Length: 309
Ligand SMILES: *[C@@H]1O[C@H](CO)[C@@H](O)[C@H](O)[C@H]1NC(C)=O
Ligand SMILES: *[C@@H]1O[C@H](CO)[C@@H](O)[C@H](O)[C@H]1NC(C)=O
Image (cartoon, rainbow, N blue to C red):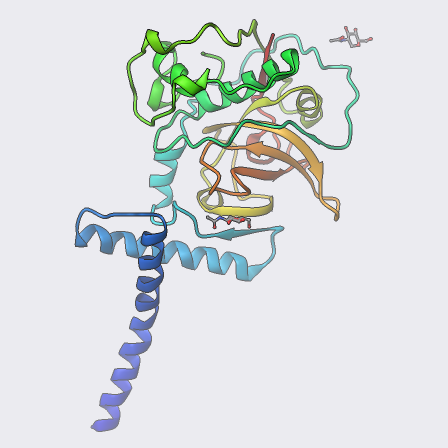
């Protein structure tokens, strides 16, 4: 009798141990990221999601068969569905019609990266399109005026009536110190608008499904690209060169700011995201370049454009 009791005890312990460990890790994690849950039920629900995600990250890293590693970050208590719903915001309406492509005949170097403004965080607001528009506009302004300036995403979110504010929008629809970014739809405040800081004439599209064309464009200025971030790897912190999994359901606008290759010859794009510096490599991700797919990894070459001054 006693030995059965002991066995059951050990069994219970073995079954409960992972939960207890997760609980401790989750507790530390909520402190680190300042998470507060509204009640015990919510906390329990988040703990279980957190535990699943940690197990996914650990088994991914243990498999060790990819040139990138995942780690826990501030999004680890969300399901992938919640993450996708809250962190992208690009409404893809079919590819843009082809405009002239002024970089058609240029020769590109082996690597390069545009210096960018301080990393921004779009918060829980699906307006990645505004961040990408601003990043590419800052890029062209910097190149044409030799000045580095930070434009205001908030102004685009508030003022642009064609696009959709926090519900997502398109990247061709639409000065920062006096207009700080907050992740809610606001109303346009004309008093805060500085003199027209950077004016762009229009935009050109990069010929679709050609990473060569994209490289020519990125060699000349930061380029708005759209990618599929539905895969769970984007939800976590990825370091190294990301090689998938992802599809081509374009749902997130980001900025290609450079390209290069690792010592072992893996080619990559340097992509600037808008989820803060605590995501990825200081807010950037290196995504594999030159895959077999003409669309590029996660569809990066499908729908790219840049502003013209
Ligand atoms: C994300 O990964 C990078 C690179 O490994 C690391 O420096 C950074 O601290 C990580 N961020 C978090 C939140 O774990
Ligand atoms: C590229 O070169 C071709 C052939 O010389 C020429 O027809 C075309 O106009 C050039 N494109 C640009 C954008 O300069």
